[in-house]
Length: 332
Length: 227
Ligand SMILES: Nc1ncnc2c1ncn2[C@@H]1O[C@H](COP(=O)(O)OP(=O)(O)O)[C@@H](O)[C@H]1O
Ligand SMILES: [Mg+2]
Image (cartoon, rainbow over the protein chains, first blue to last red):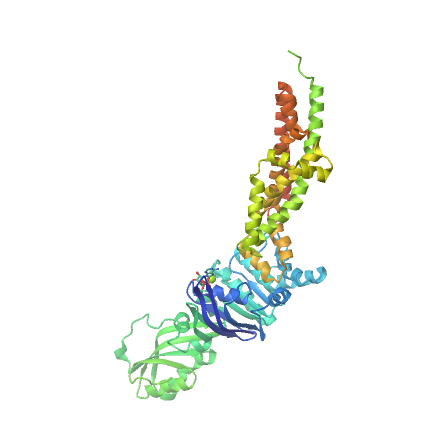
């Protein structure tokens, strides 16, 4: 569990973090997104104890780590696994040797070290590359080794700064899978800095949007997508108005967001049936956030009870984003 | 005209002088490495962006290092006479030359080492920091181990430079190949000795250079592991 409270940091008078407050629940994945220069890396570096904030607190499992020194600082660093931005492996060490580094720092004896390195190679699916040197690995493999190294000393928290920015989409998938496994199998709390909303789409439970050193949006991804005004929803949901429709052929036109198998699969036919209305999907589409199917549809309705049908959809768990045609504020 | 020195004598001269040169250069290289590497590490640790940045210490250390490097060796050789006498009990001979050679080479090695260590990427160093490694461990396992091939080459460069400096050893009776070329060859118009020594020096430095390159390549794990 990570709690960041009112964190500020400036470099030579230029403010990089301007009162950042956010938290990451134990065992969840937070994506920190935002434009270049927003302060994402500075935030990650503060949590990684590579940068000391000017003010504010960073708590990992309840303990403030911002003012530690000496061996307490090194011990805290061991609690926080870090996948740094860019190439960070020792080129003169094998993959296994790189993963062993945190274990050496922690003073773990050789035989135990080897066992643990074996487990981690297995976790990231690179057992056959144990004896390979970084120069002999692909970018994605190197990044998975970096993740394995970050996890070696059993940290409760994992930080990754742009772990996929240099990778092609397919390789990105393999790295994200590894991060997701870390959360699922080891229960670590993960904070990923990324400018790629695809990363948020695939593995993040929560998202925090940073702009000019401030958190401008923070919440659960599945909650934020229901809010049409949120940056997260516009970045993650399918666009609705790609195909111009003939609105005059419907009594009501509205956008709905549906989250989850049940909602996506059954809500609309049920509404049409209950209220005896004609209900057509005229725009939008279906996507997946993690394992959850999420739809944003533009609906065209015909029938006397169209408003009631929309209202019912809202009550049954869909969010009716706006009524494009007909009385405003119909629902949700 | 006197007759040319017999080849057997030339070889005898060369063998003896080579022994003196290797002794002077070898011992002073070891000393310069043992003392110069820590200087280089210290320079890099205290540099801006280093593991223990400290502008004041860095500036003083840099100043002393650069002063040492800019000192002409011949000046060092005579200036250190009393220090040498104190350390080795005399100020004449091969052993006496080791002191100024080592002293001159320490700042040379220090700067080379610092430059090499500064090439280790900051992300690699920071990654090690985040593992909770101590500064000592990072210096050993990251800075030095990652640059080992370059460091070995730097020691090779130092050896070659010291062979050059040791040519002036004759001034205080240190002998060696340079002295042979100058005193027996050049000053006595003995072309056979002069050019034999020049040729032998060329061979010797080439072989030494080659040897260091090979050892450095062997220390470079990146290259010779199979995929
Ligand atoms: N070490 C530093 N020295 C000076 N300015 C810095 C430093 N690190 C970051 N900054 C500045 O802080 C701001 C935020 O940078 P950063 O956290 O790297 O943003 P992001 O990762 O979101 O692109 C930028 O204006 C950047 O120039
Ligand atoms: Mg960044």
